[in-house]
Image (cartoon, rainbow, N blue to C red; front, side):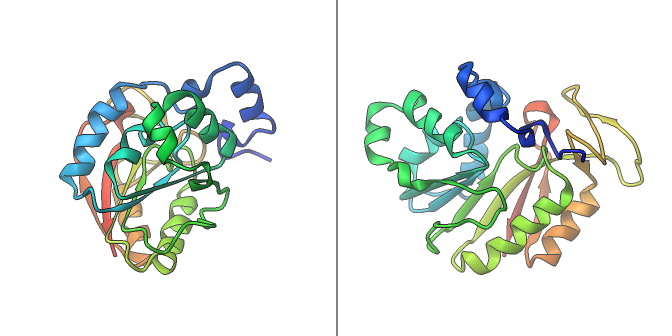
Length: 219
């Protein structure tokens, strides 16, 4: 059976974490990514009063900055061990003291177990670039009923032009695929997935690491 991504390989996280590669697992660019993404989140409506869900938070590359900036921060990832490694090694003392490990929740199915219904803003950065489009559909379909006060989701994907059927080189040089990792979809696909799940989505042409495209989606 072909795996959706290398992250699904048995023992992937255990081996990488044992080698101290928690930053590499999430794609590196440890300082560059927050410098680019955090201002965009504020531009697109993230407020200090928000209760934020960081989907696919990894080693807290963004979470280490976001947790102190919002009223409530929760994170999910396929690997809780990866999030805990970030909590242990990447947070400053004040953030570590205020962010309970109980808010770092393993979630392999985008079902958001244990996350309170008070979430108002959700983020999925560099998550659906690693997964087939049906995973985005599952996540969006589950967000609506779970979080009735959610007012905005931001997510990133790799895009290829409508009608393109094979590999596609992104602006940052990454070659993506419609049928294997790293995955791309068309803008039409992304918008249709959002609409089916009850969201109105908008594409934004910001320059993001590795040529990802940012969408906002409002219920």
